Length: 299
Image (tube, rainbow, N blue to C red):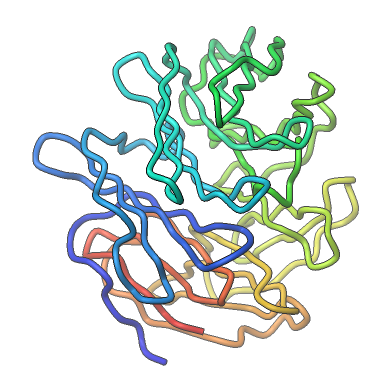
């Protein structure tokens, strides 16, 4: 099916749930402040009212499905962490202004992972997504300088207690286990945008661009599977849709989608406007946040 426009405007971020119904969340520039919005992709409609004063930096918000099936978005605003349950409309706030946010599972509970810089002596706080209570707190070495240009990788609930901390300018991704309160592994990075995705066999996978290829690898360091593209790859996304593991990437003026059982793209979708972020929903819908609107390419 052809590409369609779900909403007009300049969208800078998009994320989709890694399990359950196909839901997405977006951020876009507003009049003087950003706006966040949830979407039900089954009906192609907004889910709940827009959230005003929403951050435009992708590292400052996180969206995902928690254990039990609750879709949650967390973000920072004015020295507070906000956690909003889209299924109930309930919201809690916790004092703090972390540099990075992600989601995880801690002891069977949904959790918000907040990382406070500087990166050389960072502090990780794990908060109960229901109550805001502190579940864990530990320090971690994330390299040099600050948390600028870093972001948290997660595919909650498939990624469990694991989150990755990636950086645009470094060649490693730190994999943190928030239950064990330690760095579990250090994975090679292309230094470009990377994502964690639910794996078709259970454990999550790391997906990242590398020149004119998309690399897909396990978290235990196995060699990456390379999916070739016709040009340099920008934003990437991945998900499990039914029994298929799908990978998407921006390459030139096209969006490509692979059924990862083959190195040949199964879909090629021309896209108008600069692609700022990319997501794949659990029904296979491809969502692109662009300067020219929020664009969909149904499975």
